[in-house]
Amino acid sequence: MINTLMQSIREYKRAALATPIIVLGEVVMEVAIPFVTAQLINAIQAGATLNEMLPYAGVLIGMALASLAFGIGAGVECSIASCGFAKNLRHDVFAAIQRFSFANIDQFSSSSLVTRLTTDITNVQLAYMMIIRTAVRCPMLLICGIIMAFIMAGPMALVFVIIVPFLGFGLFKVVRTVHPIFRSVFHKYDALNESVEENVTGMRDVKSYVRQDYEKKKFGVAAQDVCRDFTRAEKILALNTPMMNLAVYTVFVVVLQFGSYIIISSRGEVFNVGQLSALTTYGFMILMALMMVSMVFAMITMAQESAERIVEVIETEPTIENPEHPITEMKDGSIDFDHVTFKYSEKAEHRALADVDLHIKSGETLGIMGGTGSAKTSLVNLISRLYDVTEGAVKVGGVDVRDYDLDFLRNNVAVVLQKNVLFSGTIKENLRWGDPNATYDEIVEVCRLAQADEFIQGLPGKYDYYIEQGGTNVSGGQKQRLCIARALLKHPKVLILDDSTSAVDTKTDALIREGLASYLPDTTKIIIAQRTSSVEHADRILVLDSGHVVGLGTHDELMKNCDFYRETYEQQNRTSEEDVATASAEETALEDSTVKGGADHE
Image (cartoon, rainbow, N blue to C red):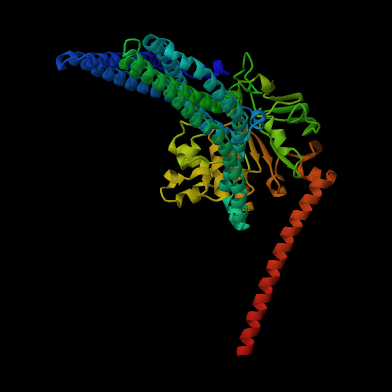
């Protein structure tokens, strides 16, 4: 875990190494000041004049300024090192997430990943900052303080040797007790963030069903759970202060009592006031250093769980990786499913797809239909290698997709999902996800083909109109058309529309299909739809049921041979005919009423 985290230090190694070196100078100054102060007190006690005291004062001022300079330098270097480390660590975690396959993403909730990128990395950053500065400064101060105490006071310094182990044992027990609490609380943080995420993304549903009070109560329970665990941990950590105070006051009582007695009884010959002053200062220094060490351990304890969660993300191996010698040429858009079986995980008993044998010619338009859970999306996800097959092989252009360079494959297989995502930025910026170098004319052309140009022209700023996060300021149909236009800019060998015209009317749907046929005549087009009108003009239509192929052929062939397709078609068209008949009857009734009303008036 430490080795993995250390790889994120990189260009900030100099600052990380400079910090403890500067801290060493700070400790030397702090330890030397009480020693010089004791010499000054002894000189005053011996009757030194003002001129004789000035050198001591000059040395003390110089040491204080040097200590201040070292402290400032250590603080600056420590800040640079810790902030830079956190920046690199966030980059590494985010980069690891970007490498994830869909199977990897399924292992982590989005709220958990957000917590790891924010709260967990902040905890590790604070711990790292304390390690390179405080964790170096305090042990050095503790050791040097005890050495100087023995030099100045001899056997009197044994009181520190006796009290420090007892205090250290108590602090160790405190830290060991709170570690399991911190381990559990971060999992509850994930649940808390998940509640926030669900409420923000589902705000319309919450308000539509008037569930605000229920959600507030649910969030309050999660927040109270986190608060309870943190309160419990803080109560235990709070024992540090009374333990430290007890140790400090015990030491001071012993030092002052016996020190004063020895000074008086020996008239300063065995033990003098300067030594007592130095011993008191070193005692305070030693005990404060020990207390700071306990705080470092507490912070490291809390950060340990965070570090493990971060490293878990970084070290998660992507289930889908580039082959050793990737192929970057694709002759055409033909697709072959050679007896494909697919499960979402190795341990899963249910097969999402079972022995699918399907061959699609380059440039062909294939419609796919099936009920909910029939594995339509699972099938097309295998083409762009978002998942890998469990058995069999998927080939594009005659080559197994596992042999292609991932970026090359996905640039040639464009997918437009039903739940489309637009990112914050202008319409042009969103469309250029398909081609960063696309010209304005190319953008307008694909928008016209996707039937998006008309509504864009009515927006303020037109193609410079700003899309809010998630595309909340455009309708579902507008969002789908923009995403289709974005995919067209890639000029792919294969274009997959995963129910991506569900939010547009049938007339617009037909115009989009006509545009695709004219703009991408050689591109293989796969259209997943719920409406038979969206696929009935396709070259062939595939019908799936629970991961099995139950129908494949043209519209006319399926009307004869596939019960599911025929029933779906008849039900949808019967509904349409009934709607037309109802509208016609209402129009006739209205006309009759108007005529009758006119006759009565006459």
